Length: 342
Image (cartoon, rainbow, N blue to C red; front, side, top):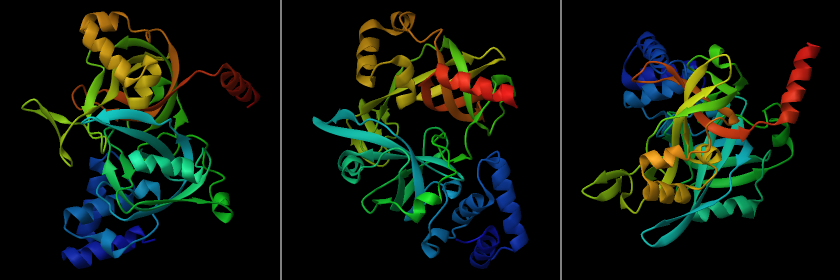
């Protein structure tokens, strides 16, 4: 795998810029992205912006921290942290199915959505949590949380590994936050969180913003579909019959403070306790005010994992949630006993 210094030399040679100029561009790119990418990851972005195709010349097995949008022919080995239940959808009269696998290594985590025929790979390979798998020929795409996720595409392949490969991942936690995160999520009080952190907070939902609780998405790639002239259009797949993904934003409080939280898809579904189709039907039938008057999530406590970022408009911190779980009394007691023993 090429080091940052080797990448700098490669960019310098092909762009005709000095190595010092390239180093400055990489440092500036890391500052621009609030330190959320490594030096290597920033080098790939700078290379792409200067027209230097580093990926084509350096086919290699990547670490998750080095994934950047638009990478092609991505190969990596990672631990399976979570496998979501398949969800059915309908598009243009045809039914489809989608699921997601959360992958992690010692550098971070990312999401791998699987669509239609790809979903069968999970069952045919017997992929379950804590397995080690090899992804090859995939491509990277920016997700709605501002992170990077993988897509299989036509050339992507999955392979389940065992033996020595498993030992290399013995120190990777069983669960982390997806979204190309930098390192494992850490338990934190809300008054201690800062932008750039990947955190686990135990908080109570004290407010829900009264907005439409779902959005239209392309059934092929999951990207948000834009409405134009009464039709929905995906930038990659053109006109589509949209699927519907859940969206919930509100405020959580843990006693030390409160913070805005944004939840998508499965995370929002956990709080709503219903599918996207059920929520859409209720919202369409009842309207905005009655729907939120009947929202049952207020006052409930959850364990929320996600990345802390700065809201573009308010400039306040917010958590882009990746996973939501019920609070485990057993786990909380264990954590309390361990803290008393220190």
